[in-house]
Image (tube, rainbow, N blue to C red; front, side):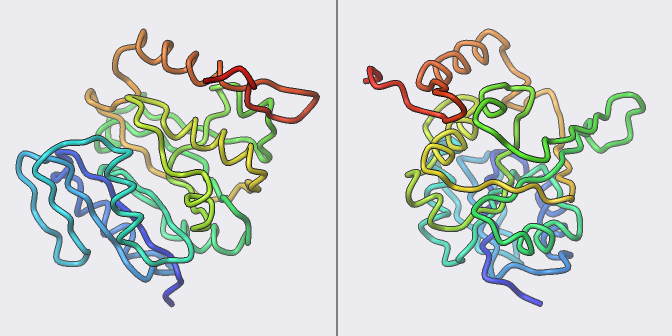
Length: 229
């Protein structure tokens, strides 16, 4: 069964794991109408036979790649995936059945190919996402959420940040009163030495503070600070 969903896969030198990622999409119990891959200045890009492949010679970053794929896509729902991750077989089905603006999963943080004992971690996301929770990095939800097309259109895409661009995107979506619901399914998030969110803890702290400085809580409502330029 196919559903009106576009899966958009960003790839930066992840060709060694890309087929595993694509196969996890093809094996879904509810299959998307299309798969689009953006090779973002990869050293050895290779078009995938079972997807639409966009090969860019210059690396312009993941926010640019996602925006390009979005504008090529046609689905009523979109799902952004990184080229080294995998989806559980019921991923799209569990999310589509929620009938919400944004559906988010639990996350299995898995070291390389998942065969290193003691390196794997299961991140259980909150059952509900409140504005206060959103401002606590411990409650993070991944970029690999199913969202209605209008969410991306109204938020205006991901900011061009080196890390945490998805966090700011979700904050903006919450400001626009989009609804989040948890799907009881699993994203297999592959960890490796070059994963962006594992690099340079000082950079992560600076970017996180910059994002948090944009917002404040008024009661239980998330607001953008009016003095923000």
